[in-house]
Amino acid sequence: MIRLAVLGLLLSALAVACGKAAPDPWLTALRQERLATVVPLGGKLVFNFAEGEHEDFYGNPVDAQITRAFAYRNAARAVRARNAAVEAAVADSWHMQLVRKYPDEPFFGSKRLSPGLATLSIGTIIRAHRFEVTVRLEEGACGRLCSPD
Image (cartoon, rainbow, N blue to C red; front, side):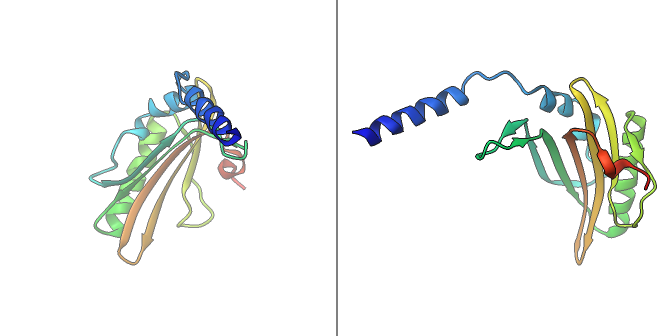
């Protein structure tokens, strides 16, 4: 009997948590960015993930993010597409760190959106026969990733 009562309370709590919650302002702001929807230079979308700000199972905060990956036929096309995505980010007022310590390191940037500072990373994955461009927009300040040192 107690197990049924606990199960009933758990299901009620889940129903309330999944109910009519207000839209996440961070996820809304990130989705309005051009890089959250554009496909860089002829790539094929192979991964598209978005989640709003929330707490994980343990109560730890999880920031809103949008992560996308695009496949290309060869490394040269992937690098050209990555460079075009960086140019598009600069054109959309992202403050990009264009100098990198290592050639395979992603480009990082930041921009003020309506809820606060957001971070952008644009990188390439070039391994064996895998050529991808990754674009990640997320809630929060860029921090040390965007600093020139």
